Length: 358
Image 1 (cartoon, one colour):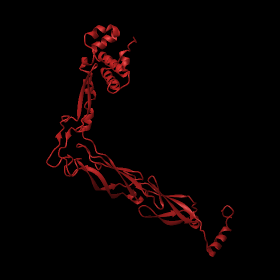
Image 2 (tube, one colour; image 1 turned 90 degrees about the horizontal axis):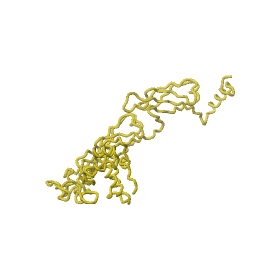
Image 3 (cartoon, one colour; image 1 turned 120 degrees about the vertical axis):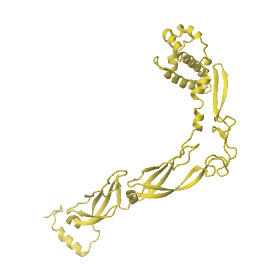
Image 4 (cartoon, helix red, strand yellow; image 1 turned 45 degrees about the horizontal axis):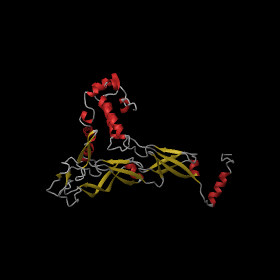
C-alpha cells in the first residue's frame, strides 16, 4: 500500500497553522475536489483524504496526539470517535454553512443601478469660462405607476411557494462520505423569493420603464479635452431598492482657429512685417477674455516669445490661471509696389551680406 501523506501536507499548511488557517485551507480544497464539482478519477480519493486530514487537525486532542505520536501512535484516540462526515455534523452541513445562502443573499440584496455616460462638446471659450449645458439622457427608471413593485396598483408580490421566499431550493443526497446539500436557484421565482401574480400593465411586470430626461450640467471653468465629470445618482435605477447609478460626462473641446492650448497655457502666433520686427511696435492681440495691448521690442526675431501673464486657462478646481504666450511670426510680403521695392533696395545697400550695418 502506498504511504499515506502527512495531514499538514494534504491541506497545504504548516505545522504551526492556526485553526482558522486550517479551516480556510480545507474549505478551498474541499470545494475544488468535491465529487459534485470535480469529475476527475482521483478527485474522490483526494476529497476523502482531505476529510480525514481535516477531522484530525480540526480537533485539538486529535491534532495534539498526531503531532506527538504521528498517525500510528494516535490510532487509539481515532477509534474512540467514529470517522466520517457525520463525526462533525455532516460534510454536507459544512458546505451548507460555508457556501450555501451566499449566492441567494447576493441575488436578493439591493443592487446599485448601472452607470451611464454622455459626451459634451465645448468651444475653447466655454471650456475656459465654464458653462451650463442641457443634455438629454434616455435611462431606465422605476415604473411611475407601480413604483418598482412590478405589480398592478392595489396588489403586492407574493412569497414564492417553491422556495418559501428564500430564492433557492435544496436537494439533500446521502453518500458514503456523508450528507451533501446541493443548492440551486429556485426555477419558479428565479432567485427573487417572490412572484408577481398581477403584473403592472404599464411596465409589463418589469417594475421599470425608459424615460427621456433633460438634465442641466454645470461645467466648471478649466476643463480640458477628455475631462470627466460625475453626476451622482443620475444613472439608471437600481434593483430591489438599490441606489441609482451615476452619470459620467466626458468633455470634448473643439480645436480653435488660432489659439492652441497646452495645459492651462494658450499659444498664439502673431504675424508682423519685418519693419515692425526691426523697429518694434505696439499691437493689439486677441485673448480668451478680450483684447490686450502688447509691446513688440525692436529687433524681434521670428520665433521670439512674449508672455501675457494670467491670460490663459483657469486652473481647474484651483486658484489662478495659465498664461498666454505670443510667438512672433515675421511675414515677408509676396508682392511689392514700385516705391516699396525702391526703398528696400536703398535699405539693402546699407547692410552687408550678413544683414548687418556696413
